[in-house]
Each structure stands twice: as structure tokens, then as C-alpha cells.
Image 1 (cartoon, rainbow, N blue to C red):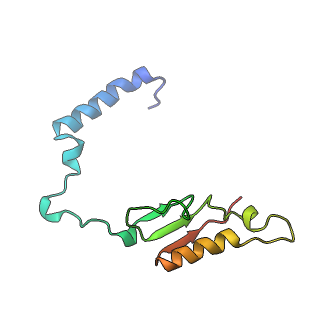
Image 2 (cartoon, helix red, strand yellow):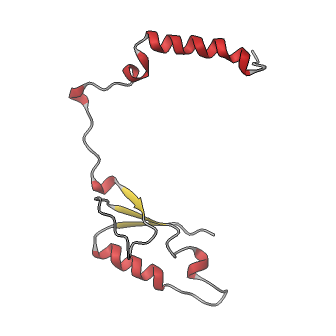
Image 3 (cartoon, helix red, strand yellow):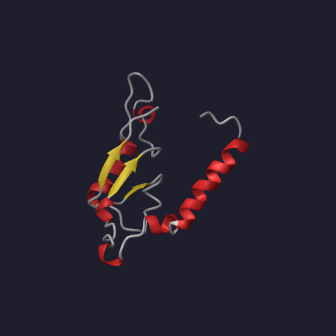
Length: 109
């Protein structure tokens, strides 16, 4: 069956919503019993994207840093065909190692 307009879809969507409401709603369908509640996510599983880690160190606990748009793109590391610049990357790696953070580096652009 092919729907030709949003007007044709309205009765179908209405019927689906009525079924969800009659069965206790979406929240009831995905509810977790209190005895099976998951444990909180720890800092080791929490990653952040920090655009300026030297001046703006996060105050929340985290375990991994994603190096993106943080002066470590390919064109930052190799500004010309024969020139390399690792100053920004080295500073960030040193800081993250000193604080025990894991790093994920994205080489793009």
C-alpha cells in the first residue's frame, strides 16, 4: 500500500498511537523494574570532546578524550608538504597522559 499524502497517513498514525496508549504508553513498554536498574556509568566509560583543554579543563569526571578540532587536524600537523608541526598535539598528549586519560585522535581535513 502506497501512502499518497499526509492525510492518508493520519488514520494509520492515530490507530498506532491509540494502541500505544491502550497498552500503557511508551514508558510502560520500556520500564525497567527497580530490582534490575542498571549501575551508573563510571568515568572510564565517559568520553569528552574538549576544544581548548589547556585553558578549559572539565570539572566532570571522564576517562577518554576525543581530539577533534583541537589543533590536531592533518592540516595543523602538516601545514605544508614538507613542514610538520606537533607542538599542539604534543602539549595535549602530555596533559592527558599526566592525568591518566585515554585519547582518540581523528585525522581529518
